[in-house]
Length: 362
Ligand SMILES: Nc1ncnc2c1ncn2[C@@H]1O[C@H](COP(=O)(O)OP(=O)(O)OP(=O)(O)O)[C@@H](O)[C@H]1O
Ligand SMILES: [Mg+2]
Image (tube, rainbow, N blue to C red; front, top):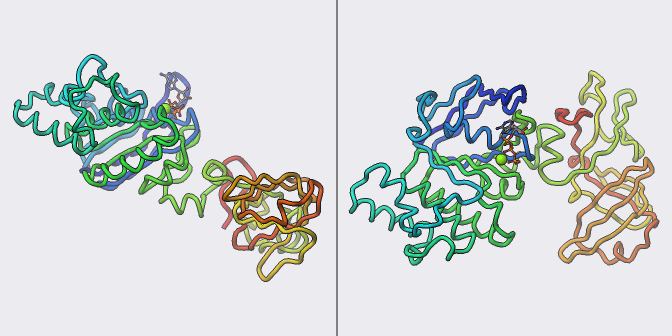
């Protein structure tokens, strides 16, 4: 167990800025996830921590001690890769024992530690199998066992579940979290799967183009995205045009003031973010209830997909808005083109500056 501090890390490949100015502080024992689209710098950051390459600027400290200059094998970090990276020609037991042999751990202790770790990852009965006799999920657990058997202070995992099928991914993510908590090992986890990140992490750090957009607990990331990029990348969102008149903000698609013009009072253009699950679609023309905004629209399509219906509508400002809601027979029966009303609670409207990484206006 160890805390990790990443201070002012910058990494270039030629003139490509892969990491801009990364500052992260991770508490001992935490599960910290780097989340972001392809190319945002997740793997680069993990490799910098592991010591596979050098940063151009900045410092990394484990338990307060800078680790620059230490070669990878002396950094006390375990790493699990996307493609398992286990040796195909030796047994599960020998794969797991590998790092201990390298470290010249005495035989009796080695056998005991391998057995313990195989138990933790629930592969005890597969110790004598060869990797090709295991499923993908089991192979990935060998990869994990191999990383944790050396008792690293920090565990780094780079998309460890992405080669597995959807069902197994869900099972194994719960398993990984259980093992991580059982061992209390500080973990930095990389994924581009937002659901995985929200389900597993103490802290989610959303990255974009080598820059941290927001680092917070999963609920805050979802409910209080710091900027438009986070609001778009994590969960689904609709963005509606906002106009400003005097002291009020209006939606282009709805009548009446929807918020106080004190938001971003310097007059920067804003957009309004609305999650699909807070948009209620009702047939016909309906007045708003208390604290609600009503947006007249016409139905584009309804898909009934079991536990919910997905409704697309077009507003009078020609914006397409998506709604996810409990199936409502009255809406499912509507023909495309029918008049509907969107009802949204005012407190569910979020305002952002109108650019890709525009900040939330508060
Ligand atoms: N060895 C390299 N040489 C030059 N550019 C590189 C190299 N490795 C990565 N890059 C560039 O650095 C940026 C960050 O890459 P990185 O592999 O860290 O992204 P990532 O977030 O892990 O993406 P993915 O989700 O696709 O794995 C990208 O623009 C990538 O093209
Ligand atoms: Mg990567």
